[in-house]
Image (cartoon, rainbow, N blue to C red; front, top):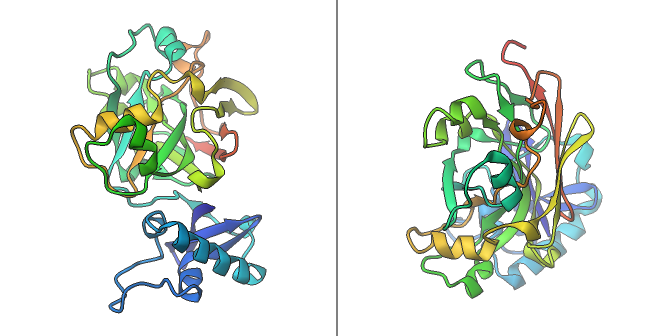
Length: 298
């Protein structure tokens, strides 16, 4: 199953992507008799509810969505947002591909290296990346992001993938000059619009192996990153197990798993994002982000 968020009446609603149409999740949940407890506590307008459903609930939801598909709007008619609009946490891994650490001239971390982004950075798969006036060295980073599906703490590596609801493409857009001003990377990472993601949250039933996915970036049609998630230093399961030693992960938490080699700061000449560019991040079996870049004065 593939879950999206789409704009309706100036607010976000959860949807189920079936081919090239989007069925409203709350409507499907009502059709399936899943619309919550007697007091209406479940809010099916956000994907954090659907990702916590069990196998039978998801099956009922999908069956109901299929019944409603004939009258659903086409994907091309809708503006998609971040599949998870309100995560409790956005945790990003640094230096998690050996070749990227080498091109950056940095040692591989001995344990998973994490930093944070926040909700202000999240945008949809076709929304504009806005270049801030504070930086002129804006870089792209193609990443696989996973979304947590159930509360977890102290999880063993062999159990960690059971906590993952699904995966999506993620662009860890970075202001390299601001990032380099401190040993703490937040200032260069947590900028408005600097976390395009989507286009859908692809649930685990459609992903045979999270560690065997082609991942690439194109800027204005030119391929600048081309790798595979098998090349991660710390795999998804190991990263989740590490995190849950020190914090509780909640449903909807986003974990971005690092970028491979080919980033703009390591190229000769360097490649910085400019007004009018288009950045595409593509992951095999997951989908493609296609974000235009808008200058600070545009």
